[in-house]
Every structure is written in C-alpha cells, then in structure tokens.
Amino acid sequence: MPSVRIGIIGLGGMGRNHARNILDNKVPGLQLTAICDASAQAAEFAPELPFFPTPGALMVSGQVDAVLIATPHFSHTSIGIAALQAGLHVLVEKPISVHKADAERLIAAHTNPRQVFAAMFNQRTDPYYLKIREMVRDGTLGPVRRISWTITNWFRTAAYYASGSWRATWAGEGGGILLNQCPHNLDLFSWMFGQPQRVRAFCRYGRYHDIEVEDDVTAYLEYHDGTTATFIASTGEAPGTNRLEVAAEKGRLVMENNTILFTRNEIPMSEFSRTTPEIFAAPKTTAHVFEFPGHGDQHIGIMRNFAEAILEGKPLIAPAAEGILSVELANAMLHSDFERRAIDLPMDGTAYERALQAKIAASPRSRAV
Image 1 (cartoon, one colour):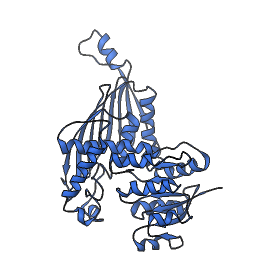
Image 2 (cartoon, rainbow, N blue to C red):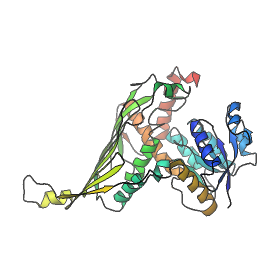
Image 3 (cartoon, rainbow, N blue to C red):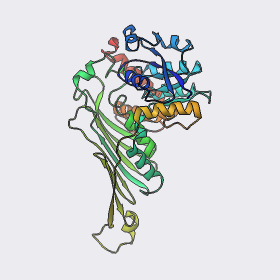
Image 4 (cartoon, rainbow, N blue to C red):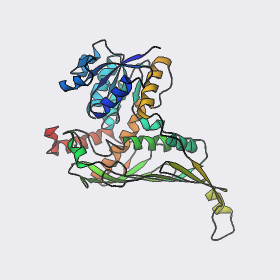
C-alpha cells in the first residue's frame, strides 16, 4: 500500500515513542525515513536512518513528505512555519505554540489546502470523551448549566522536572501544567463544550516543586449562555483524580474511574421546577452507565488519521488550526493570574505575548535554557 515518508524532528521522550510506533509498523501509511535532533547522539537511536542535525537540513533533503514536530514548545512555531513553507505535511505535538500570537502566525502559514496540518491531540480518540461530546451535541444532556473538571492525576516528581533544563521554565516551556500536561484537557474542554467567554484563574508557582512556573491551578469560566465551569489541575497531588461532572437540564453526567454515569431526569430540571406544586421535590431519575474496553488508539490513532488524510483525503481528528483554542485557554488563565482580573475571550494575544516575554526577561533560569 502507498505510504507517507515522514521525518521526526526532536528525539526526546515523545519523539522516540512516536518513532518506535512507526518503526514497529503500528501506523499503517507512515514510513519513518529520517530523524532530526540538535544532539548528534540522537543518531544512535536509529542508525539505519538518515540523520539531520537541523530541521532545515531535513526539510530540503528530499527524504520526507511530512514531518512530526516533537521539540520543546517554543520551537513548534518556527519549525512548523518552515515545514509548511517547504511544502511538507505537518503533524505538531501539543501545544501547537506557547502563546496565541505565535499560534496565529503558525496557522497563517498554512496556505496550501493540499498540505495536511494536524495536531497531536491524541485524547480525542478516547471513547469516553467522544461519548460525552456526542451527548452534549445531540441533545441527550439538554442545555448544560455547570461543568466541573478536576484533573490532579498529572503527578510529576522533582526528578521529572530536573530531567531537562528547558522544563518548567518561562523560557523553555512558557508555563507549567497548563502548557505541558493540560493542553490535552484544555483541548477536550473546548472540543466538548465550546470556548468560554470569560476566565478568572488563580495559579500557584512552584507550590509543590522547585520550579518557576505554575504547578497548581484553579480557574472559573463563564459562557455566553450563562453556563459556568471550574477547572482545577495540579502536578503535585498524589493520589490524584480525574473527575468531570456536567450538570445539565436533562440530568447529571459524571466521568470518573473509567465509567460515565448519566443520572437522567425524567423531566428536565427547570421544567420540573416551574411546574411542580410540591415544595421539596426533585425530578425522578434513571441511571445510565457507559463503559468502554479501553481509551482508544491515542497517539497511533492520530498518526494513522494523519496518513489517511494525506493519502485518502479523510477528515482530520485534530486539525492544527483548532489547537489555538487550548493555547488561548492556557494563556487566559495565566494572564488572569498575572493581572489579578478576569480575561475576556477572544483574548489579546499580543498583550499576553508581552507579559510572557517580561516573565522570561525577569527569570534567572532563562539563561540556562
């Protein structure tokens, strides 16, 4: 069968995982034909493959039709723009950029509709999140009134943060949990429920670790229709939890411990409130449980879909252009805490870029990145 020749730029932990999946023939339609990393020692990972010390050298080599970008966050924008301008198909790791202004520059570089441009939002393949999105969109839940998501199972150790000088720095990552772990959750949040109108967040910097960026976040979000939400995340709590609760007119949905429990109201709650003559009453309910055998194809599913989009024209699961929404949410939460006020969306990406650059300039750790 035909295949897409792909090169991986960045052979850190994620880049190597992606490379192994392709080399082990787990991704039909993709053939790994080149690797690239700033460290010459990375060539030893796959000595049978052409190795390039710079992304530019790989892009002009004629060895690849596409690239997968798995480098530190700030370089996603510059490498992605260069790859698109070189006429290559592009799959970029999350986040697509560190801040909204850079994300806008990257997306603007995608001018050729024949080029496939995707983001590695692998959790969009998870049947649990697919089911929740379906229930929101098809009216099963009715109008959503409140959302609460606590994601504290991103626990990370001091050794993790010490494993790279770029980690957990303003200059290296542009943030902490919001830019490294939670882009997945922020993407899912927007993908399932839409983008909020306003964000007020409270961030703690180095609460649990010797780092300069946020490792603990509590955010309050408001939507145009009056829906409210809370988003709580941490890399310092153990044991952590992943609990998503959605209160809607037709009932309450809770996702936790590999189960979705939908407690369905026989009569929508507002209708019941308006029409019942009883003082202390609530709608009768029925319980509906949804469980799935696994969590989908994850990274392999996104890479396979990327190949299918190139070879067969299939729709992308995670178009890179949608990646700006999770970047904006992360930026809005940090900017809200920086300025001690609510941030309206769409936010001013240029203003946040200036605020972030000020953080980098003031950081004693930025020189080590």
